[in-house]
Image 1 (cartoon, rainbow, N blue to C red):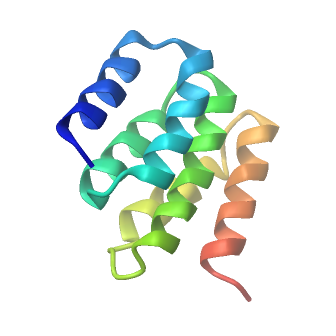
Image 2: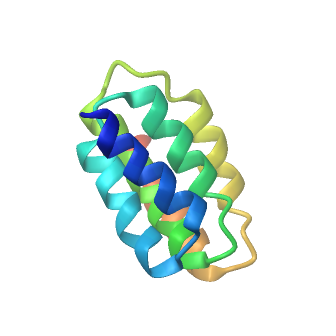
Length: 105
């Protein structure tokens, strides 16, 4: 992962274009090589005003954990559990899906 990649992602987050952020989440989750930086981005996007961005960020966290199984999940699980109480159904459904992926019964 290059500094250019990080700069482009951070610029997109700063620009706050909802349509772009929907795909930025995927880029971070699937191409980010610095798991700490990527989690930070996704945690920030999980608080976005747009429900689609929030929901995608939750699923992005699942992809990160799958790509980096050694990473500490506590912060991610805490955020996903919080999202399970989101006022928007879509976000709650994404949170439930994420929890099922990370904590299968």
